[in-house]
Image 1 (cartoon, helix red, strand yellow):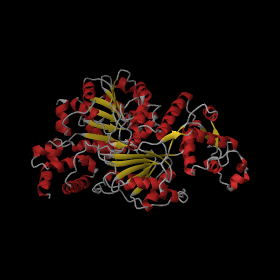
Image 2: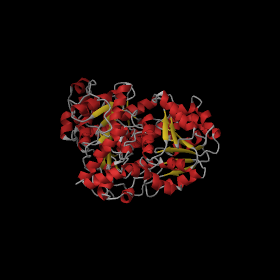
Image 3: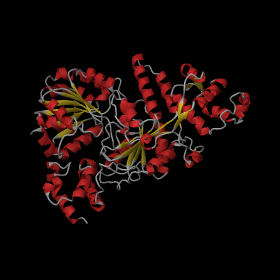
Image 4: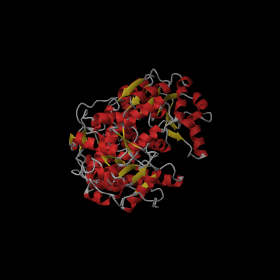
Length: 629
């Protein structure tokens, strides 16, 4: 079947998007390819369509069991013969899959790199006809990538082991250096590179200085009640503390990190995949492989260490194409700690230089006063010609002013107090506050005492953070967090040879100011994690975002029919033990509700309704629509 006919008949899509068609044509002709497309951009079709057009079985190397299982469930809904080999299968299931593979009964086989390279798997595959080999999440092969996995490096021998079998490497996140390393590490020097735009117009990007994290997070969650989201934290203990606090505030939340017991992690992942409204508070152990399309927000309570990591993580929001929101909270301590960890790294110097560059790009992203999306895309070598219009700096342009005088006052205070004190003490000195520590150290007699009394304490904290972000000040993380001058950057400012443009931070909300003192870290509090919810569990309709929907968004669906369709999908999901979104995405149900098809031909014209789903669900859907109000 020609690729376009297959796309329409099997997958239910009227046409290819962007680079899908040329990439598929290249693979069908036997060529290798590196495919870079943003999350939700349709990467999987670039290997699924050729897998069905070429003779033999396609081998898909994937790093996560949950991702493999979701992909297999979705393909089976389309009538495609697919399976996944992984460690959580019982022996009987593994034997059945091995038998189907040997008999040529599988169109696609998903397998982890460890399973592929062990137990004689390559020998068994060498006796079969292979359609192609796809390496998903290919950034894992690069030492410059943010989720480097050494076992991926062993995949370099696949080309020599299977000559003539086209190979695809696919990822949503890779800068130019990482792309080159992927090609070299996989011995794909002759591969053609297909790079789509990394721009995600449905994502609203925002960053805020940390005030009171839970209050700031509450404001985000209030805009998405009844929806699903992910909150990333920098430590395991913090995920548990934040999840417990959210539960106490009435939010359905669970923690997820690698140190939790398997039953807890299975329960949390099961609730997330079931489709219920849930806030997953996680380390980066939860993320790659997230296939749920209706994640409405992703928040970071600690700063990621690179733009690639941030882009990969926020990419888990809005996979269905509907508006989604991201929030990055950042502070001086994040920057100081990240630089400290980097300084302690035992990586080779060349790698440390790359890591340092990416960290400074991430710091710049958090503090930028220009279009945040343009700044992010520039990290991937992509230039957005105009401001995006869907980031915080575009919606509410920040105010800046010449803060050279204030910066010199701060740096002078750091120097005159001996370069050993933190921001709280320095703020007291600048504002002329005769605290016990100020009096004890004699800092009330310094020339800098009280020179900043005209500015509130929040101003000096914000200026300190910005000076740390710019590398003018450093933090002694190995000691007691004292600030000291980076002489090379500070000297021109102190001498009046450099101008300092300062961003005016928005004032902290009143509630945040009241809670600042009592919202200190606490010991982790136990909180309930219910057993994995039934796949029938369905969220209420997500609350509309406070952000205006793009003009291209479809008109609101008839609510009663849409909810009836969701209830029907929940029943189907429960009966089949699959996530609701592998049956139909909400976007498909919305279009069905809007069109109200009365015959199979009209239903078949809905995007995402292929022949298998039409045959399986069509008559029932038409009957439901006919009786719906």
